[in-house]
Image (cartoon, rainbow, N blue to C red; front, side, top):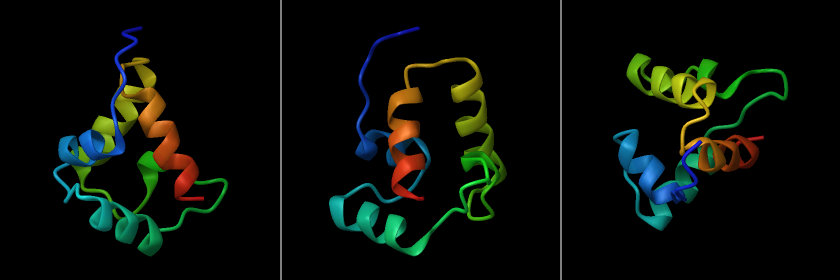
Length: 75
Protein backbone atom coordinates (compact mmCIF):
# COMPACT_ATOMS: atom_id res chain seq x y z
CA UNK A 1 0.00 0.00 0.00
CA UNK A 2 1.20 3.48 -0.81
CA UNK A 3 1.36 5.48 2.42
CA UNK A 4 0.68 8.83 0.74
CA UNK A 5 -1.73 10.98 2.68
CA UNK A 6 -4.59 12.62 0.84
CA UNK A 7 -6.92 15.25 2.26
CA UNK A 8 -10.69 15.51 1.94
CA UNK A 9 -10.08 18.43 -0.40
CA UNK A 10 -8.01 16.19 -2.71
CA UNK A 11 -10.63 13.44 -2.54
CA UNK A 12 -13.39 15.87 -3.50
CA UNK A 13 -11.20 17.12 -6.37
CA UNK A 14 -10.67 13.52 -7.49
CA UNK A 15 -14.43 12.95 -7.38
CA UNK A 16 -15.07 16.10 -9.43
CA UNK A 17 -16.83 17.88 -6.57
CA UNK A 18 -16.35 21.40 -5.22
CA UNK A 19 -13.50 21.07 -2.76
CA UNK A 20 -13.39 24.27 -0.74
CA UNK A 21 -14.06 23.90 3.00
CA UNK A 22 -17.63 25.23 2.88
CA UNK A 23 -18.59 23.00 -0.05
CA UNK A 24 -17.22 19.91 1.68
CA UNK A 25 -19.06 20.72 4.90
CA UNK A 26 -22.26 21.45 2.98
CA UNK A 27 -21.98 18.13 1.10
CA UNK A 28 -21.45 16.21 4.33
CA UNK A 29 -24.33 18.04 6.01
CA UNK A 30 -26.68 17.30 3.11
CA UNK A 31 -25.84 13.61 2.60
CA UNK A 32 -26.29 10.98 5.29
CA UNK A 33 -25.77 7.23 5.12
CA UNK A 34 -27.46 4.43 7.02
CA UNK A 35 -25.01 2.32 9.00
CA UNK A 36 -25.55 -0.74 6.79
CA UNK A 37 -25.12 0.99 3.40
CA UNK A 38 -21.63 0.82 1.87
CA UNK A 39 -20.29 4.25 0.94
CA UNK A 40 -19.96 3.41 -2.76
CA UNK A 41 -23.62 2.34 -2.95
CA UNK A 42 -25.00 5.72 -1.90
CA UNK A 43 -27.48 7.15 -4.40
CA UNK A 44 -25.76 10.55 -4.58
CA UNK A 45 -22.64 9.26 -6.41
CA UNK A 46 -22.32 9.09 -10.16
CA UNK A 47 -21.33 5.72 -11.59
CA UNK A 48 -17.73 6.93 -12.03
CA UNK A 49 -17.53 8.29 -8.47
CA UNK A 50 -18.92 5.07 -7.00
CA UNK A 51 -16.47 3.00 -9.05
CA UNK A 52 -13.53 5.10 -7.91
CA UNK A 53 -14.52 4.75 -4.24
CA UNK A 54 -15.15 1.01 -4.51
CA UNK A 55 -12.03 0.21 -6.53
CA UNK A 56 -9.75 2.39 -4.40
CA UNK A 57 -10.98 0.64 -1.29
CA UNK A 58 -10.71 -2.87 -2.72
CA UNK A 59 -7.22 -2.21 -4.09
CA UNK A 60 -6.11 -0.77 -0.73
CA UNK A 61 -5.05 2.34 -2.64
CA UNK A 62 -3.50 5.40 -1.03
CA UNK A 63 -6.99 6.95 -0.92
CA UNK A 64 -8.32 4.47 1.68
CA UNK A 65 -7.65 6.60 4.78
CA UNK A 66 -9.46 9.65 3.43
CA UNK A 67 -12.30 7.50 2.00
CA UNK A 68 -12.71 6.03 5.49
CA UNK A 69 -12.76 9.55 6.93
CA UNK A 70 -15.52 10.59 4.52
CA UNK A 71 -17.42 7.39 5.24
CA UNK A 72 -17.36 8.13 8.98
CA UNK A 73 -18.37 11.74 8.54
CA UNK A 74 -21.39 10.74 6.45
CA UNK A 75 -22.74 8.43 9.22
